[in-house]
Amino acid sequence: MIGRAVSYGAVTVINAISCGYGAALGVNLKTEATVKLTSEPGRIEGRILSDPDEDPILIRTVVRRVLEHFKLDGKYGAYVETSSNIPIARGLKSSSAAANAIALATFSALRREVDDITVINLGVDASIEAKVTITGAFDDACASYLGGLIITDNIRRRILRRVEVDDYKVLIYVPAEKSYTISSDTAKMKIIAGEVKAAHELALSGKHWEAMTINGLLYSTVLGFNPSISIDALSAGAVAAGLSGKGPAVAAVVPPERIDAVKDAWTRYKGEIIEAEINNEKASIIE
Image (cartoon, rainbow, N blue to C red; front, side, top):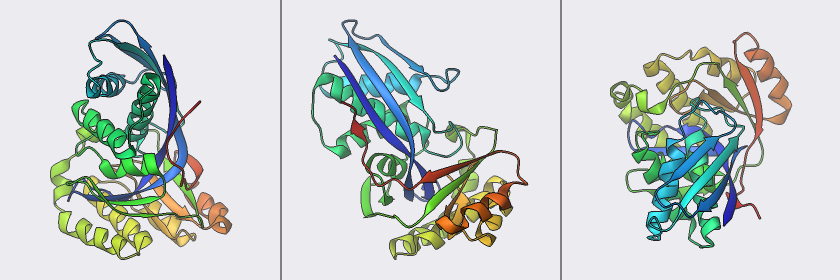
């Protein structure tokens, strides 16, 4: 009994850590998961093929929670492999994409069908338990799973709005260093709760690009990241730019004709530049 699934990356529009309200934009970076059920209950093993030094605790936690959901944890164990082109611990929703793909692949292996929000919530709960997230990142999980631009109430786990966006590309500046969400300075982020909530309301009013830029500059300031990376992208023609998640990656939403200009503006910074498409597709089972 084997299941395979894919889920996608995302970038931050509004980081929910400070105030509990968030928004994220799906991009076409992806994580694939293969789950093979075994007859060894309680034994769940996993490998992250694209980054083997990372701890596979999220793999174990997601699969166990799905098995518990169906009261099958006393019947099955599992062996899981994941592979991804999403840089880990850079603020690009690698954990959300992994949780979604692993959960969906486990459902596929079990030959069980379930609604999308149940899959997302199981992944969010597992992410909190595995301590790869502070709030559960419901906004990130929804953008990763459902695609498009998703605006959420993370406290109540409600989707407030979903918008499909087709007009732009996304450039992502990725420095070499990693920054794990669970070790982030939440006290500093709480300082800007009121301002981030105002940016969230701006996003709900339809001005999501302005909200993304404001959010990014706010978090860059309190977390000590260089805001010039975002400013340079805006100067070169990006419609929005800001820190993604708790960093260190910076995402810019760019008209196709300004891609080269933004890339040129970023060449003076050390790191990788990823060119991505906006993703409006849902996570899916791979037959």
